[in-house]
Image 1: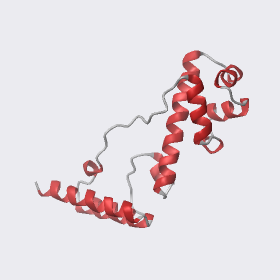
Image 2: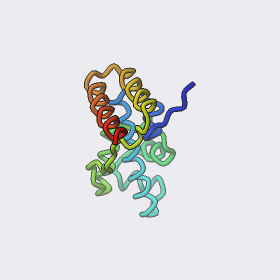
Image 3: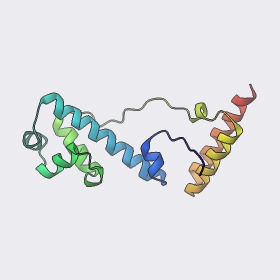
Image 4: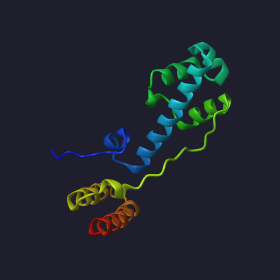
Length: 136
């Protein structure tokens, strides 16, 4: 088994790019909401009332049960809490982690495994940039 490096836990456990992004988005929303609840000092019952949701959803949130919370519910809770639902993105360039021909080859192979032609093409462009960087 090859050692692989992932940028997030979701990349490691989910093969489909769209599913990975969904998990990342829901996880981020859950962390924001949990921090908000903690900062307000709310118990689960108070949080449910303030966020205008069922107690079950708040308990799932607080226990990290991502499978029980869909994006629609999380967006509604964030809106009720006054939390921005805009994505918070940090710059990331995958070229930084592609520091050898072996790493580039593994990156391309992983992209091919998705079967997503657009993603494979993107990975090829990233690999080309990484190769140019290696030649410097």
